[in-house]
Amino acid sequence: MTAGRAELRYSPLIILGLLATLVLVCALWAMDRSRAGNDSQGTAQGTGASVEGIRWKMVTTWPKNFPGLGRGAETFARTVGEMSGGRLVIDVYGAGEIVPAFGVFDAVSQNVAQAGHGASYYWKGKIPAAAFFTAVPFGFTATEQNAWLHYGGGLELWREAYAPFNIIPFAGGNSGVQMAGWFNRELNSVEDIKGLKMRVPGLAGEVWTAAGGTAVTLPGSELYTSLQTGVIDATEWVGPYNDIALGLHQVAKYYYYPGWQEPGPTLETIVNKQAFEALPADLQAIVTQASRAMNQDMLDEYTARNNAALRELVEVHGVQLRRLPDDVYQALADGYREVLAKQVAADPFLAKVQQSVEKFYGSVRAYHNISERAYMNAREKVLPPPSPLEQ
Ligand code: CA
Image (cartoon, rainbow, N blue to C red; front, side, top):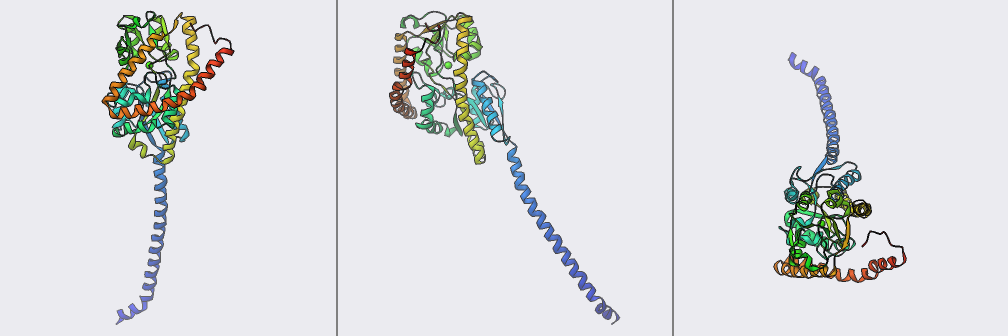
C-alpha cells in the first residue's frame, strides 16, 4: 500500500518525465530530419562537384604539339576547359604516349580514351567509305567540305558509319588545299610519272598507281630519309607550313601544285558515345561547339602561315615551284574514276556516300564557278601579281 501511495504520489512526475523525454526525442528527430535534408541537398551539390571533376583522355595520331594538325587537339582541349569553367578537363596525348597513332580509333571505341583526334581516312580498312569524310581526289575544297558535312547530310552519314564502333565524329580541322608534293625530278608530261615511286597514301595512292606511277605508304617521320636515300622519288605531305618543318626541301628540288589528292581534307574529333551521353547537356554543347570552332581555327592558321613558309622555301632555300602538267592532271582524274567505280561496286554504304557527295558537288560547283572562281579570276586581272613565286 505504501508503495501504492508512493506510486500515486510520484506518478505525475513520471508522466511529466516521460512527456519531457518524448518532446526531447521528437525535437532530436526533427533536428535529425532537418540535418538529413541539408545533407541530401549537399549530396546533390556533391554530385555537381563530381561533375566538376570530369577528366577525359584525348589520344591523337600526331606527335604532341605538331604544328597545325597536332595543335588543333590542344586548341580544342583548352577551349573546352575555358568554356566549361574547368568542369570538363581534357588531357591530350601525342601518338605513342598511350596508344600508337593508328590505335586511336580502337582506343576511343573501347573507352580507353574518351576522345581522339586524327583523320577518318586512316580507318578505311574498317570502313571503306571513311575516306570521303576527310578528302577524296578531285573532291571538295575546305569550304565545300564543311558545307557538305554541316548542311548537306555529310555529318549524318559520317555518324552512321561510326555508330557500330560506339564513336561520335565531329569535323576537327582542315589544312585547306594541299600541295601535290616534292619531286626529285621535273614532270613535263604524263610519261614522266610512269614507274615514279611516290609516297601518297590511301585512295590517292591507288589513283597514282592507276595513272602509271608506283604508290608507297610511309609515315611522315620516314619521308626525309626515304627521299634522301632514293627509296622514293617523290612524296606529298601537307603544304608549305608543315612541309618546311619536315625539311623536305633539303632532299627534293621541285615542289608541285595543286594538291589533287587532298583539296580540302577535314580532320576529325572523335568521342566515345557513352562518355558523351554521360555529360550534362551544356557540356555536350561545349564539346560540339569547341570542335566546330577548332575546325575553323585550324584552317585560319594554315591560310595565314602557308604564305610565309612558301616564300621562305622559294626565296631562301631555292625551291623550284611547278604546276602539274595538264595531261598528268587528266591521267590522275581518269585514274580516280576507275578506282572509284570499283569501290562503289564493292560497297553499298560507300556507294550511298558517293551519291551524296556527287549530288552536293554538282550544286556547289555551279555556284562556286560564278562566285569563288569567277571572283578570283577577276581579281587577278585587276590587281598586281601577288609575288614572283608562281612559275
Ligand atoms: Ca597529304
